[in-house]
Image: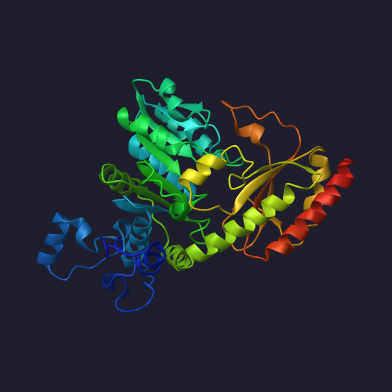
Amino acid sequence: MSGTDEAGFARDTALIRSGRASQFTQGIVNPPVYHASTCVFHTLEEFDARLKNPDSGLYYGRRGSPTIWALEDAMTAMEPGAAGTKLFPSGVAALAAAFLTVCKSGDHILIADTVYEPTRALAGGILKRMGVKAEFYDPLIGADIETFIRENTSAIFLESPGSLTFEVQDVPAICDVARARNITTIIDNTWATPLLFPALERGADISVQSLTKFIIGHSDALLGSVTANPALWPRLKQTALQLGQTAGPDDIFLALRGIRTLSLRMKRHGDTALKIAAALAGHRAVARVLCPGLPADPGHDLWLRDFSGCSSLFAIELSGGGRQNLAAMVDHLDLFGMGFSFGGFESLILPITPAAVRTATPWTGTAPVLRIHCGLEDADDLIADLMAGLDRFAQAAAL
């Protein structure tokens, strides 16, 4: 079920208006939270009409409610060129649904070597058991992806920038090759959201997001989405219905609330991240800052071409020392907690091991690497906290 079309409005206006059609809100500013399984029909005529067209309104909770439709509408409106969105109880569930929409036994799929680790686990687990062969490729390959394509290649999976080390892919070039060969492209667009990178407009067929991150923005719910272009939308709808995975209405409400401030938060996150990344680049304990928003980054030119801003997330490779020295830094930070997620209002830091999740592009560094999520705190306070931590690390590692 669809609400209003926000195509005529500027992006920030659409974020405020989307998913708030009168059939969802009944005049209330925020769409109400419907906890629903059974939907009751009052006449046989109404029941028979709904049997003929289940998407015309309430049918059964698994098929949706005004709460669900509101967020699906808002996510679709956010992605230029999208035909529809389905919601899932986590980002990983959304990734699985995207693969299951396009893959069948005997297929060959291509996956960027720098993807989110659970994506790699899906490829080596469920998809492998299904008889789908996954091959990993260098994310910087661009149009040369053509050399990896086989007769049975059904999908190319992208993530740009790449998870952990932030390599920027030439998404339009890869999607052009795929389209010419009738191969579906799927992209994990969680780092940028459609605000910074309109994935379908850049050529992708399906865009996946962990709404747990920036959309919800407060580290208090799990949610995922899959958004498809018109050609793939019917298949995605069918897959979602057959899988039977649904998202909780309270979590959806939190995502709808997060969307309204998303533009403001993304700008603050990005501005803070660029300021911190530039500051850390000058510390003696930092060998390299992995952030495409910095001019020195190898992916900066592609980032300038395809993105409209920087996200909160980047990494630093330290200039020496080992994991045994990290405690001196991370155990005594005041403003950075250690945690796996990102996109919330609070800043996070995470020791990472890129070498453990690579097969096509070996990671040769031996010094520790830290992933940093810049929250909404004051940037100078965050810089001071990290600089003091790096000083402690440098002393512990005798740098």
